[in-house]
Length: 78
Image (tube, rainbow, N blue to C red):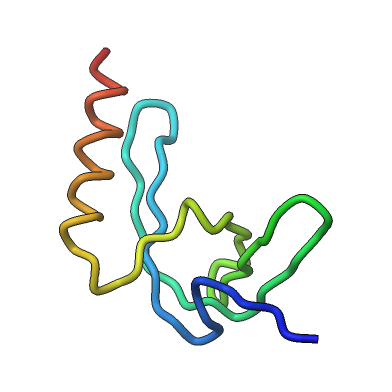
């Protein structure tokens, strides 16, 4: 059986989120990929967090990272 994923184990990514009106950001490495009936989850090495595929920003995608920061700040200010 072959399972195709958009991202791979070992890739460095950005994790960005809004925590009570503060934009939080850190980088981590994908350590595991888990698939359930509904969606795919990526487990992270250092933080042990679980993120969905649509939440991932690759470490080299600085433009996409900046866009996400701006989007979160806009949402916070509204």
